[in-house]
Amino acid sequence: MPTSTVENYLKQILIVSLETNCPEVPMGKVAQGLSVTSGTATTMFKNLAENGWLHYYPRRGVRLTRKGKALAMNMLRRHRLLETFLVETLGLDWSEIHQEAEELEHAISEKVLEKLDEFLGRPRQDPHGHPIPSRGGVIRRSSTQSLLSCKAGSKVTIESITDQESDFLKFARKKQLFPGQVVSVLSHEKLADAITLQVGGAAPFSLGSRSSEKILVQA
Amino acid sequence: MPTSTVENYLKQILIVSLETNCPEVPMGKVAQGLSVTSGTATTMFKNLAENGWLHYYPRRGVRLTRKGKALAMNMLRRHRLLETFLVETLGLDWSEIHQEAEELEHAISEKVLEKLDEFLGRPRQDPHGHPIPSRGGVIRRSSTQSLLSCKAGSKVTIESITDQESDFLKFARKKQLFPGQVVSVLSHEKLADAITLQVGGAAPFSLGSRSSEKILVQA
DNA sequence: CAATATACTTTGATTACTCAAAGTTCTCAT
DNA sequence: ATGAGAACTTTGAGTAATCAAAGTATATTG
Ligand SMILES: [Mn+2]
Ligand SMILES: [Mn+2]
Ligand SMILES: [Mn+2]
Ligand SMILES: [Mn+2]
Image (cartoon, rainbow over all chains, first blue to last red; front, top):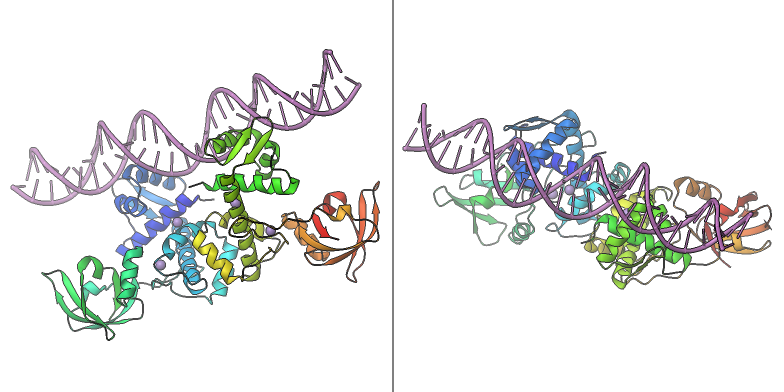
C-alpha cells in the first residue's frame, strides 16, 4: 500500500504533466508544488522508482509508469469528487475545499468513493471546472487557452480556474469569474501586461498576466 | 497539532475508561485495543504525558487531562458522526463502517464536521447505538446492563452493540440483534455459560457469555 | 513467605519521511 | 571555450512511530 506521501507525489507529478502536456516532469516543479526541498524530492524520486511508480532520469526528470499513472489518476478522481461533495452536499465555499480534499483523499476507501460518486450523480467536473477522471483513469482534455491568450474584442466562456489559493478564488468569485461565465475581452495590452474584461453587466476591470493565465477558457 | 497516532491513543483510552467506568486506564488495555506491543504503548504514554494529554503513573496506568479528554471526546464525535453518515447517506452496511471511520476521523476538519452534523440532522447516536458526544464534549451515559446480566423470563430492548468486528455485526444483523429491537430471554444457564433468546417471531437461539456481553440493553 | 506468573518498562534497531548545507553537472551568454 | 548561475544530487542529522527481546516490579498462589 502506498503511503499518503507517495500518493501526493504521484498526483503532483500527474498534475504537472497534464499542465505542461509533457509526460516527463522536472524535479523542481514537483518539489515546489509539494513545498519540500529539492533534496527531499530527489531522495523520494529514487524511492518511487525503486517501487515501480515511475522512471527516474537523473537531472532530467521523472515519468510515471502505467502503475504510477493509474494511482495518480485515481487520486485526482478522489480529490475532485470530494471537492464536489463538499460544495454540492455540505455547502462549503469553493475557496476552502482544496485543503480539505487534500487530506480526505488519502482516507477514503474505494468502496466509499464509489458510493459517493453514485450519490453525487456521477459528476464530470469539480467546482473549479476541472474534469473528474473516470473509474478507469480516463480524463477529459483541458483547454489549452487561457484568458491571457485571448484577443481584444473576443468573447469566451470560462472553463476552469487553475489556482487553488483561497484568496484568489474569493477574488474570482467576487468578479464573477467562475466556470460557465461568459467574458468579453475589451482590451489586451501586450506591453502593459494586462487585459481588460467585462463579465455580465458589471463594471470592466483589468487582470495582469499572472492572474489571467490562471483562467482557462473555451473560444 | 496532534498526529493521528496521538488521536488514536487518546480515543482508545477514553473508550476503555467509559467501558470500565474508571478514569484510570491500564497500559495493556490500550496496547491491545490499538494492536501495538506493550513497549510501544509505554513509550508513547511518556510522550503523551510530556505533551500534557494525560498523567502517566508507571505500572498503574494513565488518566486523561482535561485537554486530553476534550480531544478524545471530539474524536469519538467525529468517528460516530462519520459512521452515521456512511450508513444514512451513502448506504454502506453497518458491519463495514468502523474501519472506514477509523481513517476518515483524522482527515475531517472541524468545519466539515459541523456541516456534516447539520446535514445529518444532529443525530444523537450512531448505527451501533453508541451515543454521539455533543460539540462541547458531553456524552450520554451508556447502559451498564448487557444481555449476560438478564434473568430468564425478562424482556429487554437492545441499546447498542459494543463490538466493531465485521463478522460479529453480520451475525447480529442476521439474528435481528440491533439497537431498538426487543428481546425475550428464555433461559439463562449460569453453569452452561449460555442464554437462550427470542427476537420477534423468529426461532429461539443461544448465545455464549462472550457474545451476550457485547450487547447492551435497557430493562 | 518464597516461587512463579503477569504486567509493565527499557533498550537497540528499523522505516518513512524531512531539512540544511555542501557538492556536482549542465546550460547559456559573453 | 569559459565561467557564472541554475538546477539538481549527496550527505548527515533529526522526528515520529514501530518491533523484538531483555529486564524489572508486582500480584498470585502453593
Ligand atoms: Mn493530499
Ligand atoms: Mn478543484
Ligand atoms: Mn483512527
Ligand atoms: Mn459505532
